[in-house]
Image (cartoon, rainbow, N blue to C red; front, side, top):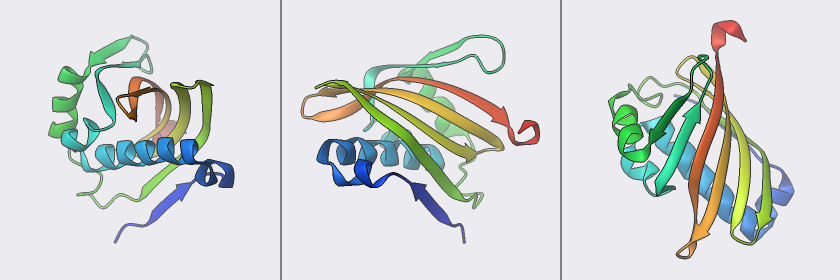
Length: 139
């Protein structure tokens, strides 16, 4: 059976706004871990954008392109990979905008995600995902 480890500071868990964003980040990681685009669609704004240049070239996807890619992966859950992510920081840059930095390991890679969230229609949604990854062998 896989183990579960999630890290967050007491301040992030204690404050309501931090808790609301942490809950979105937890669902985000759950969606990635399960390769579940339906769950991911609950945390990403429909117009969200996805970026990385980890391979030396810019990869830019919209959600209509990204979700089918996720759905076709073998999920870390089905492979019984350990469930592990950390939230390094959540910073509010206004009453309806926040930036979260988180780290995770799955699918033989270590990831650092920079997620921009906006408060719309009564909830936080990820509007941009910019990330970097390294292969476990390179770490």
